[in-house]
Image (cartoon, rainbow, N blue to C red):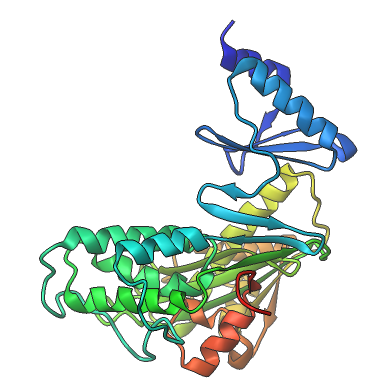
Length: 354
């Protein structure tokens, strides 16, 4: 019998629709979840006996190596405690410094100079563009536990085809920022209320070359940051309200996916997700089903947010621009604002002195 088929029939696990790498089995006290990435498997359950049973079944079908309690997975360091789970990539970050010969570099306080814009063709083309592409690629993976550099890496990724010395200098500044706390990562508290809360923002027509806007959002499950994004919008928005509305639509899509994922984990979210936006016009468009002049040029795909509001799956809330904590995903911030942005991300550095 094929070992893959034998293991599948023995486990009787169900593959998640939201994430094909997630497999679950059982419910309540007998619930167990497996995350499978190629030949790396992470098993989680409230009962150690169930975990031992799964490992026995897997070992019967494959030759596996039991690495014990979660400590290192896919380049991420994990630290479990009674308070919660800390994820960071300290060793990975230090390897980047070593490869870039920047182990002795001086740290900086922010990732980018406020008001700075990177332009295509600005500066002297690099003799070795592969070094820039390699660095940006590694920084992209570092954003898995360092959301504070997401906007900057998004900007740097736009110039991998023809990088210049100015683009490389901007990438090195990001590294100098990371040098200040290479062990900083995400913290997921053990005791938190399982409710979804999101902050959605945009920076209208901020790209100097295409005049496209930037979408930025962050999603919390309780007090834990579970999803974030900084991305250029696919179309040019004719107003700031339209740009904000497109950001709301992207946030609604993400919340829909997260809701499906937690359902596969047998978690029921009874309350609607709260979505905070600092543009009242965008909120009005989302809650008003009347098709009028302001929305006729918006693609129908983005009106998903209206459906989710009508269904009661999300609830839109107005927030002042001063308290819009997704701002750092759409533009470079001054030092004081950047500090506030990072402080609201739920990050923690276990390797820094108390």
